[in-house]
Image (cartoon, rainbow, N blue to C red; front, side, top):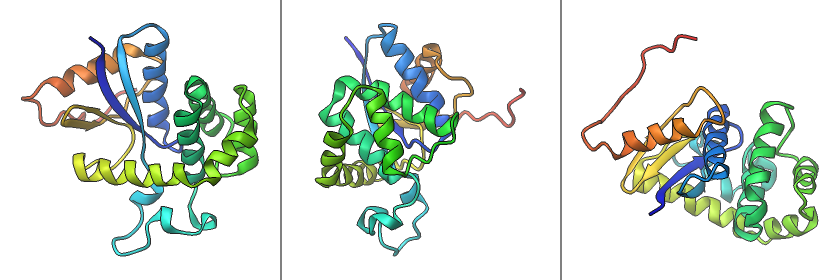
Length: 195
C-alpha cells in the first residue's frame, strides 16, 4: 500500500525547494508514495490579524508568492502530468536564477519550458479557481494542523515543519515520514547544524 502524505510549498522558500526536490526524486525513483502537494502562502503568514487576507486583496498587492502559487495550483489541478516538471523549474528559477516569479511573463516562460501552453494556464489562473483553492488549502492547513510554514509534512493527523539541508534525497523524506509516524516524539530540534 502506498505511503500517503502531504507536503506544503511556497516557491519562495529554499527549504521547501530542498524538501520538494527530495520528494520528486523519490517519486521518479519509484517510491510507493501517494503525495498531495499543498500550497501554503508565506505572504498570508505575514498578514497581521485583522488585516485583509492576501487573497482578498488586489493582485497588485499580493506580494511575491501568490501569483506563482496560483500558476502552480492551476498546473497541479488541470495539467497534472506536467506539474512535477513545472514545480522543479519554478523552484530552480527562483533559487538559482533569481527569477522574479511574481511576474506573469516569467511564469509564462517557465510554463512553455515544460511543454505547456502559457495562455491555457493563464486562463485557468484568471478564472479565480486557483486563488480560491489557495485560500482554502492555506486556511485548512492552519486550522487543522496549526501549520505556519513550508515545508510541512503531514501524515494523517500529524504534521511537522522540516528543514532538510540537502536536495534530491528521497531517504531524507523516508526519515521524516518515519519520525512523523513515531507517536511518542513531540519535538526534535538541533541546537546548531555543523556544516
